[in-house]
Image (cartoon, rainbow, N blue to C red):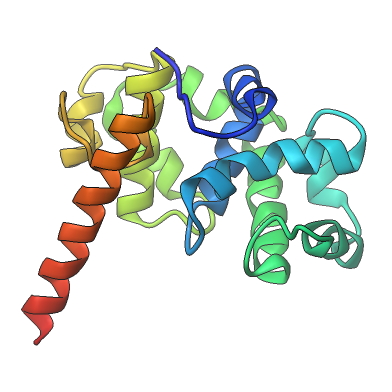
Length: 191
């Protein structure tokens, strides 16, 4: 019951063992393929030379962090903006959760509280927060009462809507298909 993306096996293992890497993968999961977003924390650890640390990243020299993000291959298509976002998220972790990303979800009473906590992170709107709640529940066993309801449709069993549903190449294909259909429907609704 873990996330299995078609990325470097070491990157998948990092996502399994490092709550911060998992959270940062979700932070970076916008306007790039999910494989890129969720493998970038592993690349960042290699560039830093050690495991990720929220306090270190929050206090990192902003220009130096942008340089780490921009170094080819860039960690994101928008390295400056996403380096800043990572710093903002890490600062919230330091301020509210003693720098421990796992405390964001390990001490919640229920799904609505988990969704609220995730939604309070910089860059996490309702949809992104619901996807992360679904990812935690479906792949990492974080299942407080009413977590599926808090995750909305992303929490539905047997759904193929987001990274929370990716377990192999076939499920990734089905998620991509769902996203393409949703995008086409939204475009048709506008037209």
